[in-house]
Image: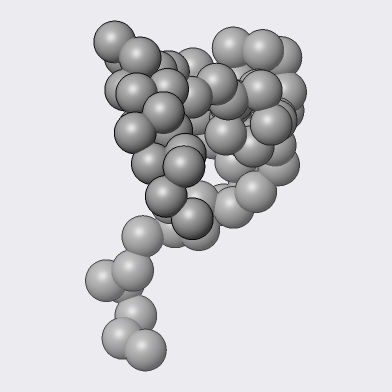
Length: 68
C-alpha cells in the first residue's frame, strides 16, 4: 500500500434514534447518527405488515380458490 493516500480508519459509534449504540470502525466521523437500525427496523423485527391495497389479495384468493 502507498503511504499517505488512505483515509484514517478509526473507532466509530453508530447511534440510532431508538437508543441502540453500535461500535464499529469507519473512515467517517467518530459518531454517526441514524434514524433506523437493525434493532428497530420492521423487516428485521418481524413486525412488518403486508399492506393489502383495495383487497387485491382477497380478490385473487376468491378468483383462484376453487381451481386446484
